[in-house]
Image (tube, rainbow, N blue to C red; front, side, top):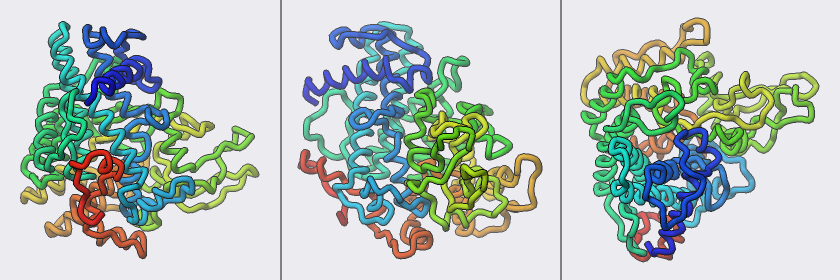
Length: 493
């Protein structure tokens, strides 16, 4: 990396770590308002700012250069390139390509994912390399480095699953034309980073760390890495470690998971917060799904908006038992017209909209969930089935199903506990459970890719759309290959 590029990165750290609107309240350790580049990485405040800047790259709500990693393209792509979503956004034809598996190396959404992730990785690399040299409280210094490692490991985990062999950049100064690393090399680094991050605190003092990486987050992410690699023993071990921390639990009612009062609560293992930027989630809930549009009379709850962008497939909606609490909490199928009448519409996603807390707004202050406790339970069930531990497999998948039976008052006579399934039947059952549990949480493409189900399940939900073997990886963006001849395009593109 040239010195001029490094200087620009440091300036971005200063801007994001000290003045990012969406991170200032979310991460409460606020450094000074201005630090010259030449004096940066000298003080404890500089170290805090450097790590806060990585978080800020995750949740920035600005467009273009400053757009956050998880603002929209990442999770929208994971939903469209699966049996979860169809696209109706006329302004972004590249999302049509994603939904129909006709995308190629020039797809803008994929380029955006690549750019955002490597920007955040670069800032993490700088923090990891520079913070150890700062004279400061050694406990805080170690914690900050491990937070940066957690975030770097998480980001590389996204990238290796999506793109395969990519550059593995670990230093603040890297060659202008880096070579690619194999997936094994990248996974080894991810495991090392997340293993180090297991030394993070289990929690933070109230009001002083919501949204920061923790010991539980590192263990849970490691479990998902091992699940993806098919290392089921290791996955089960890590899941059990998370469970045994006794730090997390399911909300009794699925509808409570996405209430604003639940942000950072007992089911949230790691989330990215957009909510402190005055309803920034509008860009990826109301803004992407547009299930609401304010009429002139703000007393009206909402009216139909024909511009709903990413919409659930009918097959997804129909896959639920009609009384499954998750269907009611996840989708909106009726709207209140200005004349007071109620109209039935096709399903839209509404799960991030807390109507009671924000009845009149067209945005939401909710968080984007990277890892919830139900994910750990379902990973543990899946891994336990693979290693022959059927007792735990049934116990933990049935915990999730039991919660889905609860309608807010009673447990309904639906979704009976699973039992006596073959190993293959259990695999299908847990994959279905994950589909219904994690709608619009950026999970579905990854689940279908790691279980090799793209070709079989996508055409059922999207007749005429038939993924191919090549779609188990996305293409390396063409612009990156044009700039760096060391990159090799994935097969089929």
